[in-house]
Length: 131
Length: 234
Image (tube, rainbow over all chains, first blue to last red; front, side, top):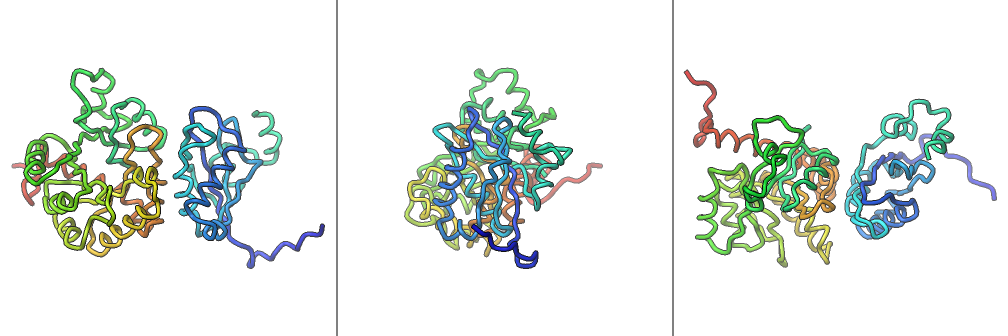
């Protein structure tokens, strides 16, 4: 299937990346986490506001060892997504709190500032080695 | 910036302190009624003495649950010169109004608890602004309520009135166990969603509580009498 062309920079949506950390009793898997994030967003913000904020969990940045990860959303909806994340109490029948570490404009600065990667060239391999 | 959580009502203090450190608070509220002197171990005693510089300050306070005017006044009189924060457990309109009209009260907790309306009107908020009584937005109330939309709309009404009459707002977690606590910036985002400006929302978890605590500590030391502050003694 052919994809549409990438939009010119002026027509693209502006995004922000929310870097978070899960505090919980036991380590949490990606599947349970993404399910509870979607449920929280839909129940607190509603379908309309969730669609506006364009929430997307970035799968290959979720680190099950350190329980850290990145969520992408629109730049004017960061506070709304944050409020929705704060209303999560349980992830997969375990008590959990999602703590936001910070918000960045690009993925690379998120990696450098919060996820502790100094050399970004071999990011993929270093993630696998860490596991 | 220093962040404070001024409504935690739990007996398991060690757990709460641990979690508060993780979440990045610099001070948390401790209900003096929960602590019996003999049950305190050395570790906690160290925290409770304000002279020592610890990672987390414990702010001694009291939550007053009164049914009528006489009880409320007697309780306030009993505790005012002993603790740093006096909070009144709201919910009843009469109690809400009395608390707003008393300048010895610091915070009015959840005025909309168990009600079918917001629990405050323009008269209450006006006198709250005059008497420097802060109105609380309770996160636990939102978390546990069955009808979340209703509670949120009442809180929105209170915030609107507070903005108009410039009464202070304080956002707290209202936690009864450690899993109900949230990081300060997340609490602020709830305030933003409910209609506060972002700066005011962040102030509601940092500067508003801090000024309140510092003022009351000065008063307890005797440096502020009425509206007069002792700057220097000759």
